[in-house]
Length: 306
Image (tube, rainbow, N blue to C red):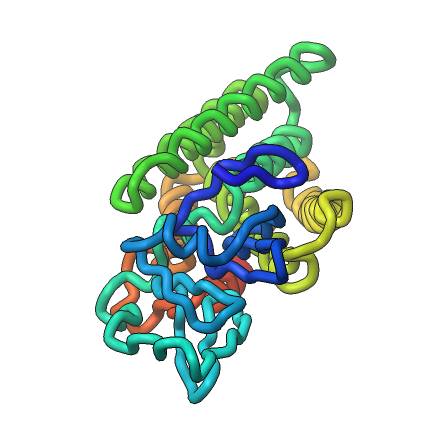
């Protein structure tokens, strides 16, 4: 727990990249954001003893799990930040750097794309296809259905976020089941067509969520909350607006007449896309895995786009 100027924040130690000291102000650089609070680096060093943190200089305490390179008097962490290594401080122990055959992405990195955004992307994709077709429900009933689906998706993702990496895929499958029920209850489609739309919605949600988070990490990682909110609204609005315009041509005559072979192909594409784009979350020793959090985002976005 960190007592910041904005209030008390619960931060997973595994998500902390490094701590930076500036007089009596400590900045905790985590994977998703940074926290500023009062204190001393010495006190944090004592509190984090035995948890893989190393004093690289008088002003920095670095998490060795996130160090990806050590060159001369500097070390690089997963975010790309380069930290100095003081001559007066003990050198970073290279043997403690994460070996290549171990998973390169920890639970904290796997959660780099916030579950709330993932849930909203999946909900938006489902709603897009429901609106393209003839909705089963209209007016207030459709609004209540959509609100209920969003609440359930958020709850599922937040619950899955507390699971270990080994159970991450089953957690995603539960979210997919919720998406299926949302489309089934919201659109007038046959079961085969519902599965086909689900596959398309899932890939679209993966793409938009990954694209937005990659842009966020690059441009607004340490921006104010309102800048982050505006960027999310702009990216989600533009991406789903473009998708609606493109898909509207295909579904201009209502629900598609989908054969089982087309459904199987769509499901296969969605499954392969999901596995390839998320491979780095569970295995690093493959030709297609990324070693750093930034590279994971690149791979994920490109695979989803393909």
